[in-house]
Length: 182
Image 1 (cartoon, helix red, strand yellow):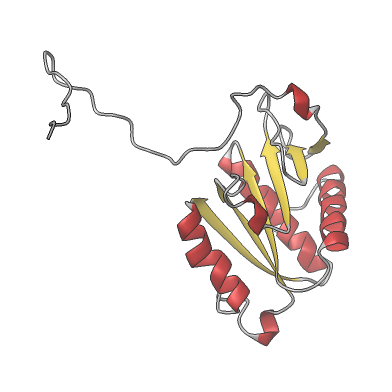
Image 2 (cartoon, helix red, strand yellow):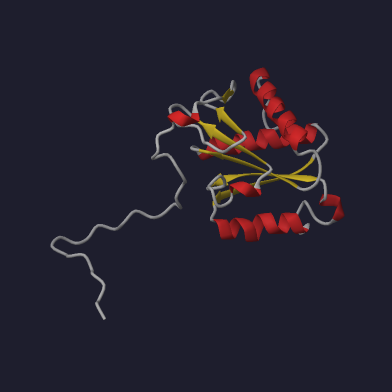
């Protein structure tokens, strides 16, 4: 690991690693970590991957950034399952765990891809429904597994949208373009 882990962080990561390995103990396994804030999610995925290695697992680690379903499947998931993703090739990679972090990994369209999922939250960010574990990483040295009454999550809380550039302001006096009618 890049830095020494606090006892609290190591204990939580170990708990999550044991839960993952209990439920997904063999084969090509996919584990996704997403968070409202990218940095803590990536660090959590790094540390979880390292802890899985310490437990004797072969691990491939990827940070995917903001990824859409088609790209995720084409560039990461399908090559991993086929044994052609670098680091998990052929028979040698048949018992590999792929640990990824990125945005939109836990959206409904792709949630079923993963054997295990984690959502990291900071401060007042709401937990994510439909994940295996929510982790409060407000204090990264002492993260806490977060249990929540999912019935209390506001209905506006949902899928993450693609990152898009901000709309350009129109010149003063300009009118919005309207589509031509046939």
